[in-house]
Each structure stands twice: as C-alpha cells, then as structure tokens.
Length: 223
Image 1: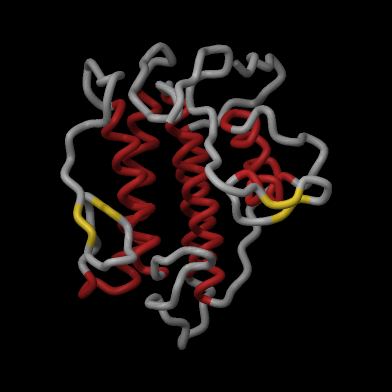
Image 2: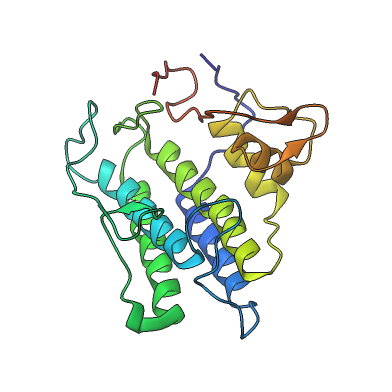
C-alpha cells in the first residue's frame, strides 16, 4: 500500500471550490457559437452531459460521508437514470431551461456542498468508494480531480484551452496517484493517470486505471 508522505500538502475543502471556480471561468470564455451539445473530448458524452455528471459526482461525494454513520461497505442507495444511450448514469440532472448559467451555478452548488461536508467531518470519518474506503480528504481530492479532468474534456468540446495550476494538480496527484511519476509536468501527468494523454517515457495508459482513494498508509480494495 502507498505510504504516508509527511511532506505532502493535503487536499482541502477550499481546493474543491477553487477547482470549480477555475472550470467555470474557463467555460465562460467559450465562444458564443460553442455548442454544449458537442462531444466532450474523448468521451461519448456531450459537454452538457459531462457537466451534469460532474455535478452528480460532487453531490454524491458529499452525500457519501454526510451521515453521522457513513456506510463503508457499499454506496448510498440513490437510483440512477441514463437519458441518452451513450450518456452518463446520474441521479441528478440540470434544468435545461435554466441555460448555461444555471448549469454552472449547479457546479458551484455541488462544490459548496462537498466543501462544507469535508470541512465539518473529522479526519477519522470513512465512507465507501470502490477504489478504497476514503476519508474526507480523499473525497475532496476525488472532487477536484473529477472537476479538472472533466473541465478539460468539456473545454476540448467547446474549443478552448484549460490548464489548471501545477500546485493544485500536485496536491491531488500526491493523494490519489502516489505511485505516479513525480518528475513530470503535473497536469500532463494527471491527464496520463486518467487515461487521457501520453506521458513522455510512459506512453498512454491502456485499459482500466484507478486512483487510491483510501487514506495513504491504509489498504485499498480491488474495484
């Protein structure tokens, strides 16, 4: 199992809201004729569906550790629906009539909810994730990485660039991918770790990839 690095800077609740603010700022730079119905990067989902998936992720991560006694053996029992044959399975969907402003506001709502729960929960709390039973920092880190990589997917579909700060990427990579190369560009390494890009000297990750959501120094589980 990956060992705890005493010099590592933890991922915080503030990082979740920061990541979403970076993503929304990028989305607002999209050209007026950019289509949210375009495919998002390498995904089979549209940009709009990908944003809905991200909203669902942020809410779900908050809900997973919100109870006084979170479940550690399975996910909370929401139902999931798929609105299009190639789209995501979500519990939450945005009101299309509210437009892009409404969609981006929901991203801020999801970030605020996850940040609030992470802030009030002690580090000893654990909640289920199939990649390893996670602590509040783990759920914060998962919220950040979901935001950053899906923001990149969406920006590719909208025809704009997205490059998050190196220090934010570094904190998340150290928490979720502690065995990833440490001497490479952090953002490129994050894209490589999530199967979206090649990394010099490492190629592209093929097949199934996973992060380490259990606290470092604790055993992860097989997905």
